[in-house]
Length: 193
Image 1 (cartoon, one colour):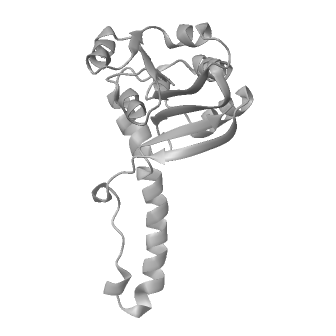
Image 2 (tube, one colour; image 1 turned 90 degrees about the vertical axis):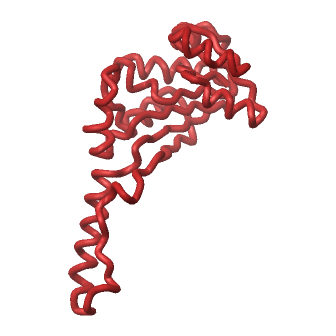
């Protein structure tokens, strides 16, 4: 397994706990040192150079959490294609990023990090996987907002029966608006070679 942008090594540690050999690549020497202090295998480097230098069909998995939103648009296609090239048959690519389909995540929270370049639409990312040759492509919605942040729902049991149809319609509208505002904070696309 290869973790692109391994940061503090959370994914490397988790993979190791499950018996999956993994190494990480990060541009930050400080992050690589933190990984090594935990006994994790990590090195500094450019993710594109590392992927391009790997033998074809040599990896069981490539993963990257909260990196692709920092890349120029054209580089994302290159990343997906290089990962496909490096993966063995049955190998998996997992890319996680903030979810622009949630207005709160995409229009407000996304821009808190000044190094973010642009949000990545899930359908665009799925298309890049498909064009590169991946199959069994799946989108996972991750990190739902807590209920305390979401819009309140009308309690039908607290209303007279004659108001139930109206309150139900309002609740359905609330659900649609709530999903638009507070859908999942992140999403991942998983594809198999």
